[in-house]
Length: 478
Image (cartoon, rainbow, N blue to C red; front, side, top):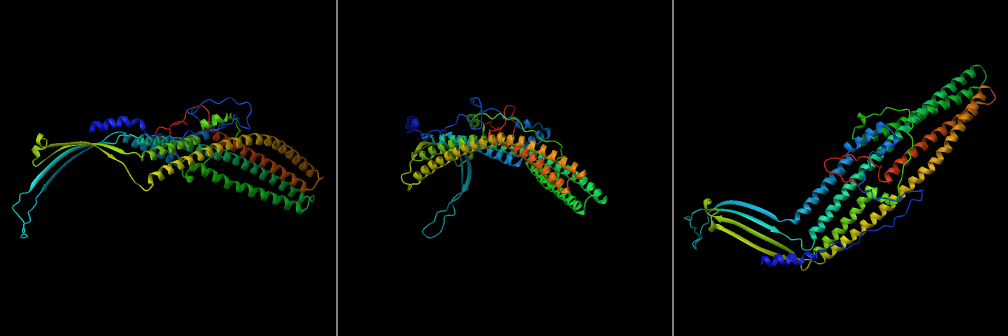
């Protein structure tokens, strides 16, 4: 009987279920619309991303990025999810092997005999029972159900690894954006401070001219109003900077009250970023890798659901000993054993298995649609930020000319006012125009820096270098 079951296993091994769905294929354009003269893509699924933020040449940003990889709590949660997925994969693989068990028991019992008179025989003697046994059972994977479940678990673990990398990249990009914006805010605060100082000098000059009887009290009031407005703007920028500093503290896992960044008189430079081609983008982005592996997981789940239609064969064996005296526990006359197969098949389930297969197929279609949407979104993000880089660069050049013209106009207005040839209103107008142009230039710098970070993120991270270790489990580079 056992030999028959083993032959049945060998004969049906080739009848296992396989994922019925073909791999997802996407039409990838040859190049981005915003690109010029790009090189063909080469496979870079295992290429390390490295410290891409070093293109901004800021040592403090380097330190903060390292703290994100070590202390950010969102990243720790993603790492725990990856550890959980790998543990579930190990649990799925365990189903390939037999289950072994052992038992050892002892009992003492006494039973009485009930007579027709309603009395019991109290003369029966208590007896001891000792038993020891070994059990083994194995469910051969005839239809590939375990194999498909393992494939689904492995795909889930790979998706978790890619999600971990995507989380790290997102946190790194968020930190870089926030830090660079904080430096732009520092520059805006510095500009506002210079504006306040200039307006204080203008007010002092106007007051001196008023005391000399050259100008009216209205000019003094206008100069004082302009100074107070500049002081309000300077003070309000402190709120923005404090919020940016607090956001950085949370990203690096530090309470905001225990974290501070000194102001620096510098303007970050916008780097030149090699973008790559769309095929390279698909290979580099960890979120696309995670979406693709979720498709593989859903595909394997279809095979798991289909295997429920086939009978389940269980091979079981048992051996042991049962005696009344402990010394005889392992004597030959007390030994027993059993061995045999069990074949079970569900004959009627009111459509439950059909519903499970339909649910698995619908889940597959859903993950395919999500994957395709993720790919389209990736292309959009890359195109958006390539366009932003190009257009904002042109706009920044024009804005620089605007600032220079406004500064020239301000100097002329101030000289003319001192000479008494124009009213103070001309100076106020020129000062407002120059201040607005300078603030607009800093705003453009912030937008260009943000676009550069988002472009790096859209392309899946940096290029070259070593990927830092992330924690308790090895993380696959995507």
